[in-house]
Length: 188
Image (cartoon, rainbow, N blue to C red; front, side, top):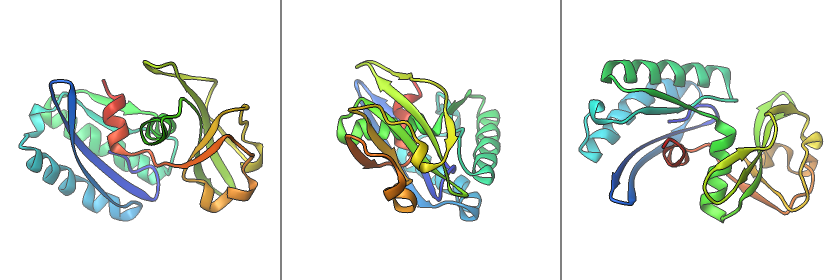
């Protein structure tokens, strides 16, 4: 699950051979996420016909993102995983944005940008080599116009509504959230 942005994203996945079957829930984030996260996660497990203890792990969006959202996600992940006796897998939210862009648009060179509020964005460059993602430097907090976008790379994230004209030109722009389904694909 992810609560790092203004959107809540929860997913439960079950591998059936080579195929990943996914049950998902999306809703408002922020303060509402803390009230709905656990009941919705348990409802998805029920829909999938799984018990909490049958999970291989609990993966969560570990940031960067909203402080309150990250605190909520970390606490719930630790509580659920401890209770179920399974490991916790923190997933970089900028990596989840890159994975969502790859999955939805087939891109492999992504400059992820998430709205950090206060006239700034979180950003990181990710390159998919056909098998896995490789970070191309450290994540950064920057002014929208200062985001480095290598030639031929796409911008992906949720920062376009707030900063679209101020973000540098790119080979493309993809609206993408750090969704829980992307985290399921990254977790293994």
